[in-house]
Length: 88
Image (cartoon, rainbow, N blue to C red; front, side, top):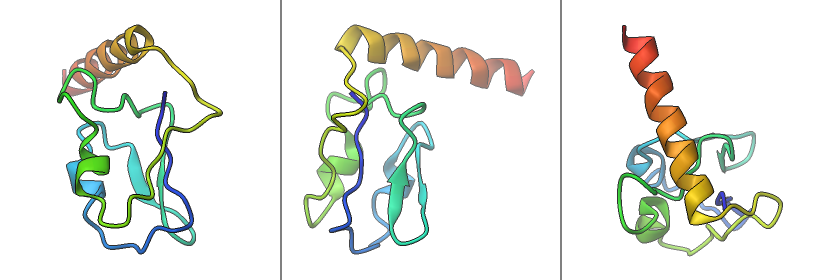
């Protein structure tokens, strides 16, 4: 399950630096999460860090991108392998 940021976002800037996958960026009106990069912090932390720091609780699970924990772990490994390849 990728997460998403609702339009209740107040652009407080606390979620973006917490994302270990660089999945969060500023959109046209508020921050957005790239579902191709969001692993809900699987592989990095026990809980999604953006959700932990969000003061308005506007980061639910994205119903359009439902993934199991195993799928998130596979995505994490693919992102890590891509990062290792890019660094070489």
